[in-house]
Image 1 (cartoon, helix red, strand yellow):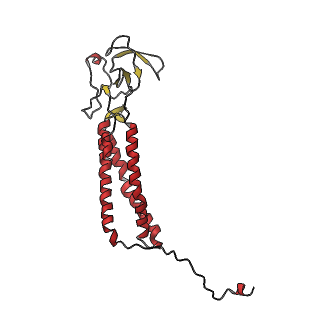
Image 2: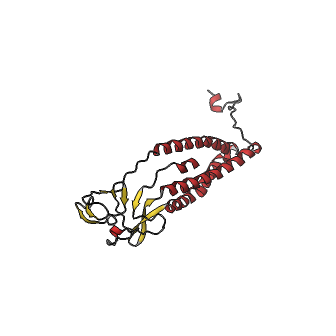
Image 3: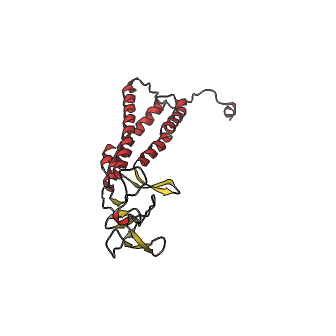
Length: 235
């Protein structure tokens, strides 16, 4: 899992983003200093592989066309008669296929231990206690896994945010993430959790010789030739 911390794509070039600040502020430039751009406004436009967080930061004075896909012109931060496109600039990055291959290999290797864990759980208890053992395992998974994980990983994801959209004066959705910090923190936390799980499995493996294994009773039932029921003996 730690290998995935170094498999990713760069952030790209943004105008109006202060990557060193946790506040939702714009970095003004000389060309847009008179535009009084609103803090937290998010409407990205692209020009020559550079993404502006809003047309205002590009110094665009005019907008025409439909509201969904307007065309901006007279942009002070670029040359005259320059066209800009709505949305983020495309980023050339081919690391996705390598990420999928490495992640799939890790999941395949990790899944090989699931069968052994299940067999150990079922065979170290009496036959009439197997249902209870499975129930306790699922309860532990829900208590120590499903409950804290959304909180932990929610904080991890939020910590990598570079720009929060303004929503009526309150922070809204995160619109731009720092991909380097995202993958480092996300996979780093996952690697730590998996390492702790590995240590627990190592302790179980070390103590496995002292665990009493309850063998299944596969002896077929034997019907003795005793007295038949009265209904059958009378036939």
